[in-house]
Amino acid sequence: MLQNPSTSAEDHGFPPGTVVVKQSVWAWIVWVIPWVIVAIALIVFSKDIYLFLLALILGPVSSLPRFFSWRSTLYIATGDALIFQRGLSGGSRQYSIPASDLREIRQRPGLLGDVLRYRVVDVILARGKVTLGFMPMDSGFAEKLEEIRLANPPVIDTEQDHPSKPDRDPGPYEPNVKQDSTD
Image (cartoon, rainbow, N blue to C red; front, side):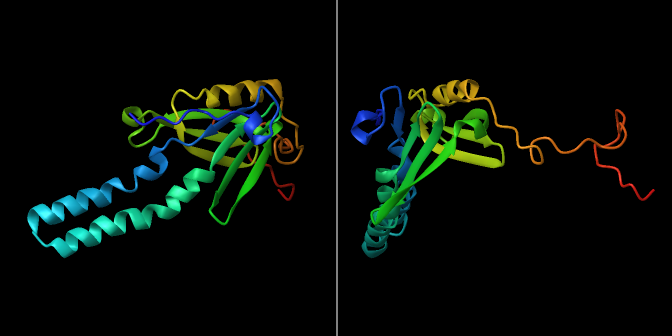
């Protein structure tokens, strides 16, 4: 099986204890496979060499952007932030999320994740969600994120995280909505 080990934090200028993980190599190969299947089906069923060559060439060519994106994608867990780097050959961008914004870390298999040994990690934030795809199964990245989340309690934003209490208790079956004072 194809494997893609974690890279060294020091190689990327991060302090020791930082976990740096590349996406699984399947992040781009999985997009080539359907084209190869189409090419094989065309040669077997249509016997048209030109359609076969077209599919065989279009597959890898159309997958080139995914390949370059895969090469520059890194997931980084420092002691106080989640950083992910994405981009194409023209340059990559880093996005940093403070650890205090992390609310929950969930792992799930991708479409073929159990077979190809990768996971999808959903990072639930104070305001939204980030999905980290094609995470190598044995990387330990989700566990490191959970450790960081627990070590950095959330900063309470009074309006967003804890909206003001309603004027009265809504009761067990009534939705928790703010009551209008015009009644």
